[in-house]
Length: 249
Ligand code: 13P
Image (cartoon, rainbow, N blue to C red; front, side):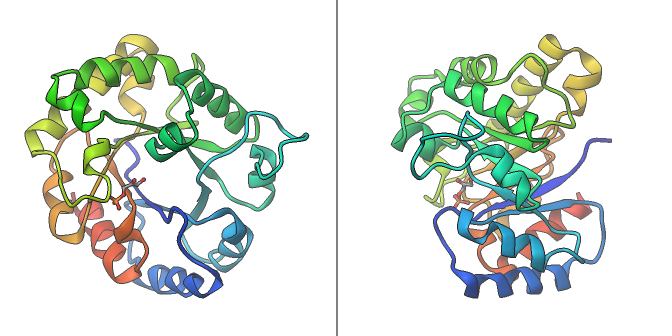
């Protein structure tokens, strides 16, 4: 049995007023069949940890620097994130790969930095619309997996999120067959590289326009162990039914 994880990526949304959504979300979680992780913007991390202390909600960051400290104005290190009480960090999100030109090797160094601070990495991979149109999806995914995942990957230190770039924030969602094809491919690659025990245990999330009305269908795929949710994680009333659909899957 793999861990089921519903993770919310708030991206650059939310000030202190948004913390009330965490209270509402905590009140709506009725069982522990799915781990719930919320990744707010960095200035909210500490307060988010404080206000979820007596709830099952875990807190994560959205990026970390490779170094632990130093002259890197504006950046945040993995030990700083861990110091807030957060337990996860999203790494290699396509918005960072694009806007900050993060390469697979940059992302791999960040994953190692996260592990060194005892954070669980949520590694994002995904193809562009052009990659998919050119039938290059599996090549791109294979390259991102081999380039971004360090050798010491385990099911405890890493979660993988498949997020097709063309599905992020667009309302477009791959067909269930397309999701199954990519998730089965990722699972096979993980087993080949890390062995059956680790490869079968690493949770695989789908991300990209997950909403309450499509979550149940997406969670039917055998190798989909949860979701990384953007827009629909901002309101507890949207995220709670996605969590329930995952728990029931
Ligand atoms: P949306 O759910 O808003 O499409 O965003 C997905 C995403 O990028 C999560 O990391």
